[in-house]
Each structure stands twice: as structure tokens, then as C-alpha cells.
Image (spheres, rainbow, N blue to C red):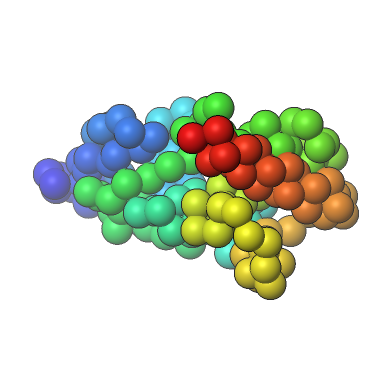
Length: 162
């Protein structure tokens, strides 16, 4: 880390790519991803940790990037929705219409991806618990639930095929 006039240059590992970026101590991860790295999938919603539109994975754990300082993420693995290419959850959302206006979708995709990494084949009470941390103002929850179920079926089919 290089420090100069209140600005630090840090190295982030975003979607398996190392990126160097100059940040102020108060810059949130959300702002750095969007404004400095051009990764606009994580959305600013409430910007106080309530809605989940800005959810990303930090060392494989879903976090609200509006609540994390960018300097705290140096050296950690960050995955944004842009890093979820060709995943079962992405296919599930497409096939089951797991979105309406789409604003919350990236946060749900990232959170549901993490859920399926931890519980790939069995649905349980944890599904609701995990997904409660994200809000959909269009009330598209049924499509989202179907999308998660579809993704789980895709994962089960892959496992069965070996």
C-alpha cells in the first residue's frame, strides 16, 4: 500500500484479476467498484446496508459493499456479479424470470450464488434466511425463489452426470 496526501494505492483482487486503485480512506467498496473500476453490477440502493442491491462476495462471504471500506478489502478476494459468468444461478434467473425491473437482481444473484455454494443440492430454511438480506421493491420474490430452485436442479443434474 502506498500512501500519499490521504490517498492510498491498494491492490484489489476482483473477479480473479488484480487491480491497483487509488482510494481515499472513506471510499466504500461500492463506490470504488463502480466509479474507479467500471464494475457497475453492484447497485447503490439505500447505501446503509438494508437493501442488498450492492451485495458482492468478499472472501466467499456475501457483504453489502456500501458498508465496507475499500481499504479493508486489499488482498481479499472480491467477486461481483460480473464474475458470475456461466453459473447455474445465472441460468436459473434467466429461465425462471427471476427479475422484474432488474435493479436488485445483481445483489440477489451474488447472494444466491453464495447460498448455492454452501448448500448446492438441498433446500432448507437457510434459503429464506440468506435471501432475506436482499430486498426487491417490485416484489419479484416468487420468480427469485423459482430461479434458485432451478439453479439447484441444474447443479444436481451436473453432479449426477459426473
